[in-house]
View 1 (cartoon, rainbow, N blue to C red):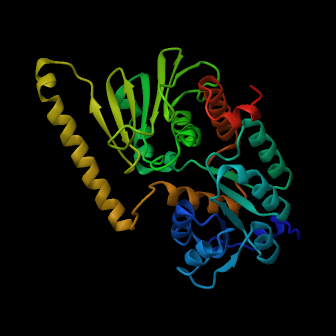
View 2 (cartoon, rainbow, N blue to C red):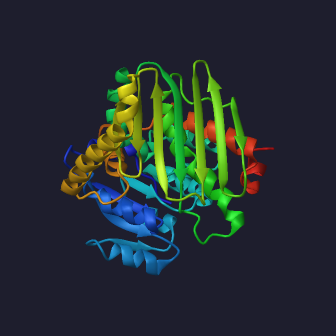
View 3 (cartoon, rainbow, N blue to C red):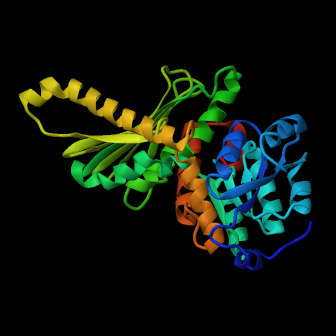
Length: 355
């Protein structure tokens, strides 16, 4: 495989130069990555997938996009600035190693690689080559999450953070696959908690419960604060939400749609009576404003993804830090490992984690 110098290529990139982007994995997430590349300041030049028909269909939506059946051939024949990895988790590490060898910066769908040990090794390899590796924790870059951070002072001291994920991602999957899907979802709630928990999300204090395959609950007590995550493959309607509960109010986060709103915590008989109407009104107002904003931006799905890709491309041009730091990436990976161990999720990964 040919090698190129990351440092020398970056010096040739101006602030408005479209980055040459490759993409491997042309399924659902590959489709949405491709749709956001131009808006984020890139140009899709190549796609790779063993399913060449799928690759051709995606490439056909854009101009002058080369199609390959594997990532290695793409990396050899195309001079890429960045590679988007949207393939199944077991392939991530090998593809990432190919890209690092070729001197290409990486944006990788979550989970980055199967274990925290793999994560640490991959990040270390990238550092040696002066390359960026970033997991796709797009929820953390939503407008609603940014606004929630700005509103923290309004809710006083945080006492609870609760995440609820009712997913349809397991529909039609064999029962034995459901726990694997849960394990792949876990970086989402953990990456949000990483933002709001001082010192980062804990790794060791979790207690877990599993009522059935695809049903997962975890709770963690830290000084003055309780964290909890509920992931269900069967609960309906679908939901992807967080509540950040403070001593003076609560922030509601709708991660499916990318908005948040604050409910004040004043206590009185009158407030108790009007609360359901106040809550509904605040939700309706926030949802309507969010819909208008996303319509203007033509953002039809996966809020936060465009922002993350744009920030990653800015970091590639400037050789600054990736939008998700190595510290945050490792903290999320270690907490995920611990939750998998505690809950006994995904037997093949249990072996990798040494349990």
